[in-house]
Every structure is written in C-alpha cells, then in structure tokens.
Image (cartoon, rainbow, N blue to C red; front, side, top):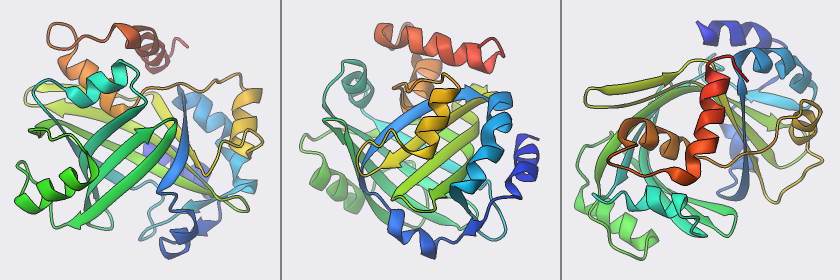
Amino acid sequence: MLSQQINKVLESFEPISLLEMDRVKLMNRVDTKFAFSFSEFLEFLPELSQYYKILEIENVRTPFYESLYFDDDNFSFFKDHHNGRTSRFKVRFRKYVESNLVFLEIKHKFKGRTLKSRIKVDEIPTELTEKQKEFIQSVIPKEHDLKPVMWNSFHRLTLVNKIENERLTLDFNITFKWENHRQTFNNLIIAELKQETVNRNSAFFALMKTKSIRPYRLSKYCLGSIELYGGINLKFNRFKKKLLKLKKINAHAA
C-alpha cells in the first residue's frame, strides 16, 4: 500500500500536533499546485525533513479524507473555473476521518487568492439543510440550487514549514466516484503549497525548480468532474492538455 511505503520515509520527520497547527491556518492565502509521480515523490521526500514538520493525528501521519462536492445542474462552479473567471467558488463537505471531524467548506478563489469559509457539521448529508443553505448564501452572492455531484477521497500528508508561515499538503490514492462510475489515480501525487503571499524562495518551491516540476492549475474537483461527467455532459477543452499530463504521470509515462 502506498501509505505504508510513505510512512517509512516519514519516520525522519519531526511531528506537529493539530493544536500547534493554529499558526498556519491560512484561511486567506495563495495556493500553488504541483503534480508528480509517486516514485518521484519517494525520491525527494526525505529532503524535506530538514525544513518541515509533519502533522500527526492519533499516531497517523497519512490521514484519510472524504469529500462530497455540490454543484448545480449546469455545473456552474466547474464552468466558472474552466472559463477562467477570476471570482469562483467550490462547495463541499469534508470529513477528516481519523479525527472524526466534518465541515461544510466553501472555497472562494478571487484574483489568485483563496479564501476559505467553513462551519462544523455532524455528518456529510446528501441534501442541504436550511441552516447550511443560509451559510452558503451568506458567502456566495448568487443563489444556486445545489445538489451532490461527486465523492472524492484521498490520503494526505501535511507538512508545516519550521520557520515560514507556510503549509504543504500532498495527496495520494486519489479517487473520484458517483453512482456506478469510479476513477482512481494510484500513481499521481497532487501537492498544494499554501502561503500568505507567493514565496518562490520556499524550500519546496526551490526543490520543484531543481526537479524541473512546474506549477499547474487544476483542482481535484475539476479533475473528478471531467473523469465522471466529461465528454457529452461536460465540455473541458481548456483542460485537455492538463488532463493528458496528469494521466501521463499516473501511467508512469511522465
């Protein structure tokens, strides 16, 4: 299992607790994404231990996440991203499995920055309550008739810079599913560097440069939407090149 292989490498990392993570909440931030193969990841992961601590919850360093994304019948949130709108939203419920925490989360991308709003809930619903609808409407100016469209799950390791106000998440075993459709990316790692402002002198930014791995822009929600609904139901012309790159990585061809 991939998480077992990663855990062996992670033994050299100094742990950090959820409580200590408060200093890097970064609910208003700049995100920079990278994608690479699992074998590349294992190769350079040990280099990061001198710069980052790792989040550990109940002795687990690669916790499991489950998300349920919502959109309307027209997939407006997906299309806003595809059409390059500078102000766009994503709505999801996310369960942090090991800590048994569930949140309704809204991510607002505005002129390159990410603003995250969330409220705690008891469980992931398949239908929004009135209270949840009110929360969404308080964040998103335009009203949408939202429904669940996609389950997403993955394992994540979270690294926290020892000095800078910076967090790095690395997701693997990424799966998308809805009804009878399912797509898993077993060899793909999606990294997301979260910073107050873009700092290309960051240890991870510098490492990516030495490995000739360039930033890319494509959310997991958009990737899953293409895999589950692309083609007849959803046009994704602007994302085709990025999708081909991710599939090459996943197929060991990058």
